[in-house]
Length: 353
Ligand code: NAD
Image (cartoon, rainbow, N blue to C red; front, side):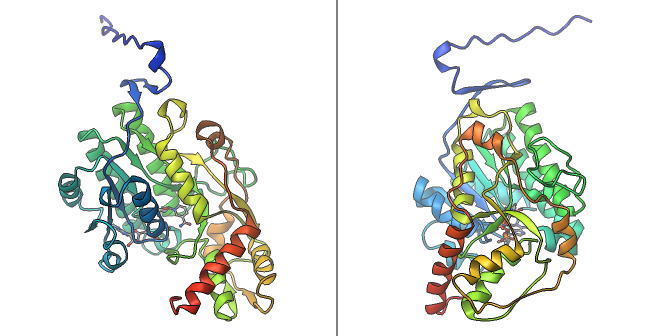
């Protein structure tokens, strides 16, 4: 059989740096983000990512969306909001048309603990929603599809300390399975179709704005609420359970920096390890007790202990550091101080759930 003719693209040397090569597509440039859709915007991360994106790209250029109607009251005043179920591809397409969206930050998902209560629904939302967005991104030649993976992509066979970038991905939760599949799908769409997909494996995220949505690291946020309200806290993992974590300002910084990074610098796309700190549940309680000496913590592990035990204790994020300059700003003590200040202020204003 005659071999197919080779397509030769001559790139002037001055523009090589901003171009990236995919095997099947040829050279690609880093395109700017102009009209952004955020899915799952009412959750723990979206509640703070939407204002940050609006500050950077202009409020009118960031469309917040969620399946929950109550989110409109929080995110619909400063910029556009749309009610959107990501399992409905036609509804996504109508919103992309309406606003001329060219980039998506896709946050809608069921998290680890909630996902284990209804695994088929977890697959439908996490993978069904992502597949719609990737197909629409490809067909409409969108500039970017950005979405988080998670340390849940790892499993009990993964090395648990300083977990490498390239390692065993055999999770035992449906959530983790959707995260591995999501990473692979994004890389597939990049290499096959030239769709610029990017993602990072978030550790547990700690924040003061919106409560977490049913993950295995929720205890690391809930303990702050108990401390500020002066209530005893029952932790659902053992005192010695150590997991990688990140404070919300670093969570926002990491996803926004990755989204804007020069494509030519990226060797990885949808699976960057990132971390900021690692601590045990007991170490967190001790750090909070420096400010709230009366805090009482009891440890009563439930089904989430097994999930936590299958995840890394610490992460090697050297690829993210080398390829797009990742550096966290917050460690344990700085995060604890800032969390307590923010939650105390909310409590005084009567705003704590
Ligand atoms: P969250 O549970 O707080 O928020 C998820 C949002 O998605 C909710 O507002 C929910 O209403 C919405 N949603 C659920 N089903 C939907 C559907 N069918 N259509 C549209 N919206 C729907 O989650 P989060 O913590 O903000 O997480 C955002 C992303 O970051 C997820 O992909 C998650 O896996 C990832 N992540 C989060 C953490 C963490 O600690 N928070 C850690 C690792 C990865």
